[in-house]
Image: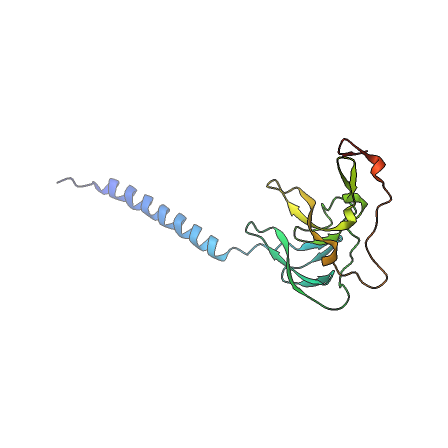
Length: 171
């Protein structure tokens, strides 16, 4: 039967002790580390904390995190009354202004052509979506009839015409 010398036993015990302290340190460190704060959502450039709800276009939206911890607006139930946030419309690139899930009525920024026909952006409500690289953009989500405009406002019709459509491209 093989037995270790006193010196070999001491080295083994030292290795075990270091391993136990290291493992314990990792466990303690992981358990006591402060949780990272939840990333807030953006709506028209304003910041809203996780869990906060806003009203826009006749709908409630709640700031949540997606599966990757990124901020995301989740549309809830229909609501009565005025919007509680600014709704400038989908007038520019949403990066830095709106978090994914936010919706806005379309504007001429969203105009496009199908052949020689102009499709006005104001015909739809647009939602911010993120691609797999985190780049955000507006994507048509539903008919403009699903958006409730506050008094004195309405769809922002385009000043463009079909004459600007050439081979399906807006010039």
